[in-house]
Image (cartoon, rainbow, N blue to C red; front, side):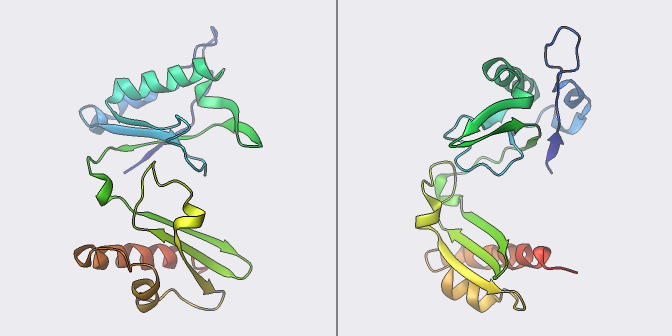
Length: 180
């Protein structure tokens, strides 16, 4: 379960009070957490935009430090490449300890031609240039992503014991994107 936070400068002294409402979330008091912008930014980890394995106080501190470093961490004005803007929403979700070998990358995006499914068997912050590394599958506008296509074209480098779970996640994710 992820929590989306839309922090802002809401104190008269200009200090960000962003994470104060988080302390009322009792289920996160003892849990390790991850915090990151809820915007589609490639290489968030390498850009210092991800806080990992934090307690709730750590999430609060991360948001405050981000504010101080970027004028307002919760409303960060900055840029990635040539794109400038303000980061307004952050995801806070449970941290799940795992090894690099247990991480995968998947992306589904839509164009006029249909849905593009990108997959790479090495995910995480160190994936690098996913556009050149990932396997790509195009699903036409009036087509559906099939289990056979995913298995044959995208899961070729995945250990057999993980294929079924990934297959279900990928097909279900693609179904969510289909118009009703």
